[in-house]
Length: 154
Image 1 (spheres, rainbow, N blue to C red):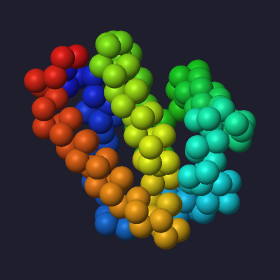
Image 2: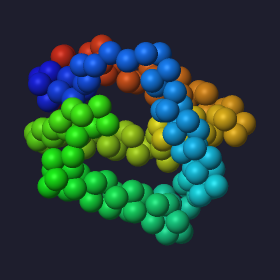
Image 3: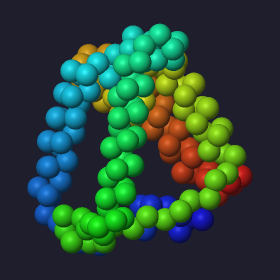
């Protein structure tokens, strides 16, 4: 079971200084600003998407999927390595019905709260403090899955 976890397969073996991760903070802040400006964190935009009233969010999600597909293709085609010089590997994962249940649960939570993990922090940063409840729930759900993973049917 653990061999299919990407964190175990692609985890870097290199040790870095504490300031090495500051670049992720900067990119995260820029990404949050981009989310705000593109209205990706707007509860109203998310509700429009789920009510099939607007193409805005579908366009953003679709373009992200397209960029991801092209990026993976380029990485595989040209054997691109990480900035640290380590090889990037992709491991096929086996489909199971838990992915359907998890996706439905995720979509239900997304529709009810108007937040998914990406824009969640940007929403809190913009002052939607009620999303702290969603953050706590997301952390609790992630912890619960990790805690009971071995007992769950996969």
